[in-house]
Length: 158
Image 1: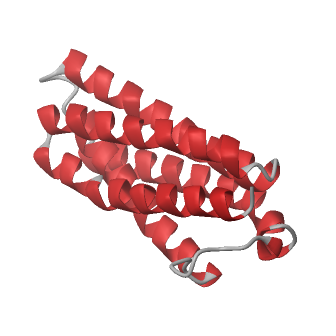
Image 2: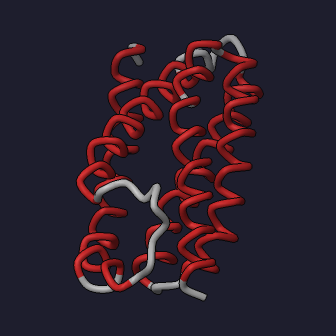
């Protein structure tokens, strides 16, 4: 399969996960989320959709670049893509826990696991393709920020 097709498949997969997460988030953003006390560094709601769209695209490109190296590094690629899949599931689960269940504490525990899985994905991707690893850095930084934001929201509303 051509490299561009692998990248495209992974980008579409990541954007689809983002879309499904957005569906869970949409109602909570208009009903429950406005009732919460938020820290002063909380970004305006309109920031999240474009940031996540860019991050999902970067994630998909990174995964596609790793996937295309299967012939050269089968086991390392398999391990990296396994961690990638786990973090993608955790990514989607966070929206359900925070916005679907309205549970910032449970979402905080989960986002810490997500952060660790993204970091491990970065480590594994770096063994296969340095560019792919670097493409995950904005995602890692954003989720680190989101972890602090989640913790702050939980603390302010406990």
